[in-house]
Length: 421
Ligand SMILES: [Zn+2]
Image (cartoon, rainbow, N blue to C red):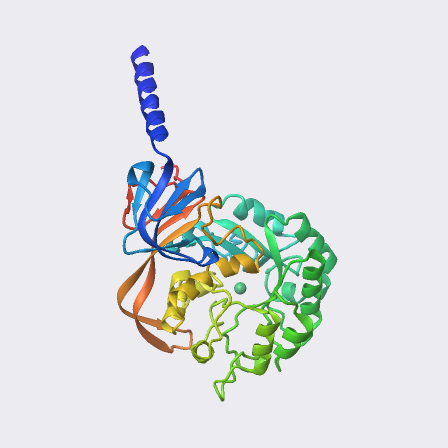
């Protein structure tokens, strides 16, 4: 017994001694840092301590880190922020994205692609949010924020999302304000009637809570006017998601399909400060829109996936595949990173996220540009070929390595949740 105690004492002294000699928990060496929020675009070292970014400098000694990451030839960026996902996964089989099987649990799909923060796009409304918080937000390592659905039941599917009686702007706004740590905006989606009331109710809730509204304009036939939405209903900072969708008669588009020109209402909306979010999804991104839009310089404000079981196994796949498409379309790497980190943080008014400022939470993605021959297609089957694709080498969340593709940390220690066996 005595011997064991002595041994334990010696080991604990050794460990304390080790961490005392080393200033940082992690030192990331030699990576090309792209941190648009701080205008950094060069090879730098990054040090992490106690969950925070401690230092970014030209040379930080390897011996100062308990773990040293070799990032030479790789890009070091803020942890990616995906502002359109569906993560209220649950076992109620008829409830679609609200505690149902169409939504997915975040940690299984985020860290492997460099994502450290997701914003759930309206799975829960005020009535169902407490359950979402308990079973997803509070137990996930991924930071999960939310747009609260204007429908009290959230995305329960079918008639639930058409029920205007369950769209209460006052209750929704009060709930959002009470839960402002988790809720960053209001969402409207899937309304199929030809009626402005749901959009106006969602916008009213957003005004009352002083947060943005994100709108998926649903499927009215003939389509509701985007000019009216942008210029009369939206305020600067409000978000139009699925911005490169081409859905025929049920949705107006940003680009005129017959001329390939960006419609004047889209240009005016951008001037006004309306936010354009990709929200890739199952059928909400078409090259027929994205190619002419990017050619005309109409870049997205936020690159996001609309992650759910349908989109992830379709053309969309994941955040990095979506970002790779914009690279292939001619958007430069820095703009692609900005639209996946700093810009989304600003859109949801969480400027403490999406950057590598000293003192901020150490959420970091280390990315590789893989060279090869790749085909990137959309849901219509249109394919473009490219020779580079983004790949995630490492993800750090709150100062801990939670994903390491090739063991570039030394020593290799991961901080993921351990299963029972
Ligand atoms: Zn969605």
